[in-house]
Image (cartoon, rainbow over all chains, first blue to last red):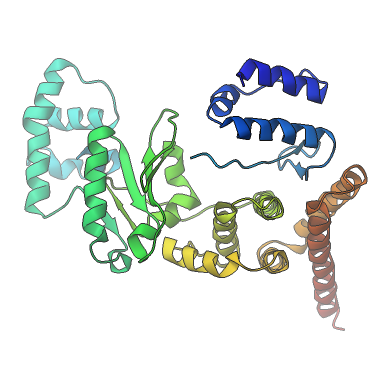
Length: 72
Length: 299
């Protein structure tokens, strides 16, 4: 999947004009196709409140979601 | 060779060096080089023709190797030679960079990866070649608790002044704990999170910076244990390391935030664990404050 496609898909899922860190393209490009799909599914699960949230240590108003992917 | 010297060493011994070993001009060029300032062509000639050979000769005379070995007694036979070879090989590829090997390759019979860290100003992508796993870190990492631990059993091509005093805030340790629990619940690889957790908890509660072997042994013992044990460990560490007032105020806020969040995230598995752990700390901190009050009024 192309990174611009992924960005559009994620914005669509989140129904928000989220911004992406510059690192996103590089990371997403390095993933296998199955892992890219895993990330998209995970974003969907975040939107559906199915993923464990973690509070930011610097800003209590922010919550984050963490996913680890194995890159070889 | 430059990695074995630092500006502080030169400045401290300048009066001894000037006139006896180097001229004032040579010292100034050496200092400039160590500050990573650009040398002009004249200075470069002086540096490579006169200064560098003198330093090399002095190092050879005093049997000082350009390779820095720490914790030699813990390093397995044959591994030291292999490690030096790897550092030498990587020096060719990453010229002028600070390179350090640490981890189980040095002290364990069995090992998975050979962990190598290269310090660099610029962002570079980590890579793995066979068993060799190269991680690039910013130079600021030299001042971290992580580095102070890993360098205790290590082979490197540079000298360093070790920092031994760190500030680990309550918010740091809580975040490390929360990430660890979350990674376990997600059934992801949590070894790195566990290492961070052990390193921080041992430091804040006992002021001990574990060496990589101690860290590895504790990590192995905790790997197959349950979340309850890790939470109890955190409770003990927080009670030993922070004042009751700080624990009560900070953790009450945290618990309240998570209680609100759990209304929305009904199925989250991590939030009930955090709430339970922090509530236990608050309870203990309350009990501890009350017993101090009783002592104070002579009950």
